[in-house]
Amino acid sequence: MIFRHLFLIPIGIALAAEVPAAEPYLAWRAEPASVPEPLGGLKGDAQRGRAVAANQAQGNCLACHPLPIPEEPFHGEIGPPLAGVGSRLPAVGIRLWVINARLIKPDTIMPAFYLDPKEIYRSDDDHAGRTLLSAQQVEDVVAYLATLK
Amino acid sequence: MIRFLVLLLIPLSLWAGPKSGYEYLTPESRAIQDDDFQNPGMSAVEEGSKLFHAQGEEGHSCATCHGEGGAKLDPRRIAAYPVFGKAQGKPVTLRDRVHICWEERLGNFPLEFDDKNALYLETFVRHLARGEPVNVDVSAELKPFYEMGEKLYRTRLGQFGMTCYHCHDQYPGRKMRAQPLSEGQTNGFPTYRLGSGKVTSLGDRLNECMVSLRAARFEHDSEDYRNLEVYLNARGNGLKIETPAVRY
Image (cartoon, rainbow over all chains, first blue to last red; front, side, top):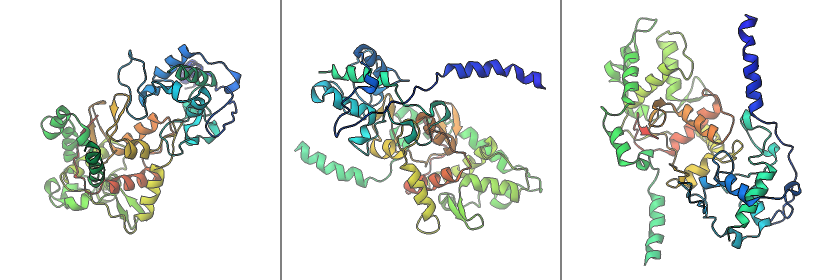
């Protein structure tokens, strides 16, 4: 009987290996309409940020917002169009929207992409202890959105 | 002039009352639901009908009490589910009622809560009330359960941290990526899903939402889902039952 289950061990290891360990959560400080410092002092990359915004498994900003990403079909109709957001908001303001929009608009549908995992209620096992985006991905998306003038 | 018309339309849309998921379907999808010979959900109704007429361990069938084809079942009472169960001291959903009869009246070995035979029986019975307006009375005993259900409906869940209310009250009719959001009404359940090709219970549909939110699911047979079912059905009071509806 024991042997019947031995073959499951490598499968278990393979599954565990697929999900990288959660990065340590980095604290951030919000002002009324901004997060002045980049997360972890990281520098964002606009090109990578554009990819994160379009990727369905990552930022998926397109789920709700129309964006100037013409090669992707089906932009959502929930949030405001983000073309020109870089002219309307400074990067530090965009950062607060991405990190935790509820601090600006408490009732918003918009997910908080860098919420302290302790504040997440009923996360499923695969995502427990994790933020929606990594600190680097947040900074990349902020850098990308800031270029949309 | 346009502004005036828009201002006029806003209150009109608020008066319109709840909107069935049917209204968010394309004409092609509506046609599938409208024709019993095309609607694949009817196979679950047929399976349920067979079970309804099958003899149980104690020598009789559902039809022995409820009439051939369920003729003695009152569609208005079916449309009133979930009801408050005095013996249980809590809401009893139509699914619960199927299990209670299966075990206590037919004397059969208990089924898993989300067993497909229970789904077929629930689909068959609710189909008997097709066209009947949902009418769940939450003014008395069910009130606290309705309120707990509404609380869950408005709780941010999972890594995405959205509530049911966000998608289904604030943005019905808008698209999330390619998917149009509906009001999340329950009048068509159990419902045939064009995406999966399966007849789906409300509990399974709620679990799909939980997966989308990256939230831990509740058990099918949990008080949380039972309370939510009370809230959702009462929220759709007045909508006609469409079981088995066709949905995406």
